[in-house]
Image (tube, rainbow, N blue to C red):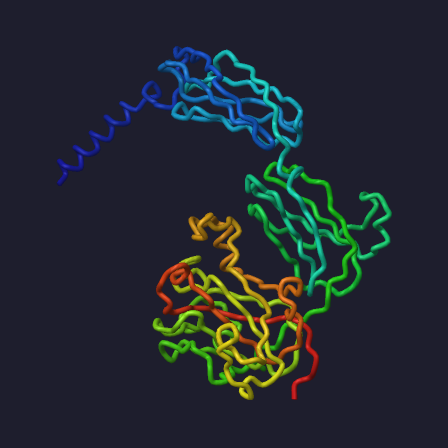
Length: 429
């Protein structure tokens, strides 16, 4: 054992002696010449910048390529390795011509002779994306349109409680930031709820990854008063024609109203795998209401945009007790005459669906959107009865991701939570 220990010490000592500065792989070797210059083969303008394709020299000393340029008054650079032939220069807030200096470099960081390139950036997203605002129940909706290249954008909502300040210069207004929302969607509505129902001057601007800002969109809006429909008063109420039933007892229907957002099986509703599609369930809200929106949570972190998660929804309402009416085969889904349609919805996906309607791949924003829940707003322009008084609410699952566009018209759906909002028209009895 002593001989083995002495041998190990000897080997370690030899290794330490052999690892002198002369053999360090990160040592700068002044004998390595600077590499030859690159050639520029093409320049393609993009919003806020350009993609510059380069021809790399056949030079053993080449390690990579760097573009040096001034962007919005700041000296910056973009680097690529010798295995890539395209540089992306971006972040400009102007369409004016810009100078970019491109160098090859070696392992010492020595630069080749520069190649100067003039680029003509297209207008950045903060100048081309369209922003509009409108009042809604409980707050403000912001519509983002024409984000063609799906740029990452921060959407900053501001408020000024004195609407008369609309006549002042922007720097003289007493702005307070309300919230910052984030999106890379081409076309999306973003809502900020929980605002007081009083006339307010709102402002909204966009900010990109490089700090560039859009002009501010302003509007005087009055959020409509809205409350959460008390889920403790909601009861499952089957008039006799509900066709969705549970697979096993832990997956109770009333889990849809328990306000537990865990994603766990014990806190969701899941129907039997052999239920027909579409499926529907009926609930008594306990009082007359006008609904403004219905918040919905799919099962969190459970196969987003796949399998038994609902894809297409309908909501129906009735002011009268549906048990007093018989199903009518001449009506849609054979519903009784007391029912009216509140709206039809498809689960939104910020990055969009494929042209054939399949969900395709999903982005980080898609997953965040899925887990944070979705709001289905009532729209009387599309559905004339959307704001009708009702007491009974019917949830209809037209299709899941598994049954959509298939001949299989039976399947399970899983859902975590449903929570309606609106105006209460009477007190609980």
